[in-house]
Length: 72
Image (cartoon, rainbow, N blue to C red; front, side, top):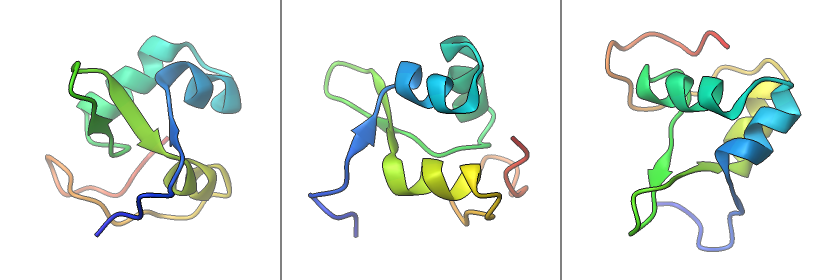
C-alpha cells in the first residue's frame, strides 16, 4: 500500500532530474519503464522514492506492460 506522505512529482519535475523533456517522461510511463499514478484530472504523477531510486541506478519492481525491468 502506498504511503500517503509520499511526495508525488510532476512529469516536469522528473524531467528536470533526468535532464530530458517532460514528454520523454510521459513516454517512459506509457511504455512501463516508470510507474505513474493518475490524478482525478488524468494527469500523471510519479513517486519521488521511485524516481530517486532510478536516478541511483536501482531497479524498481513495478507493474509493467511487458514485464521488463526499467531501462531509463
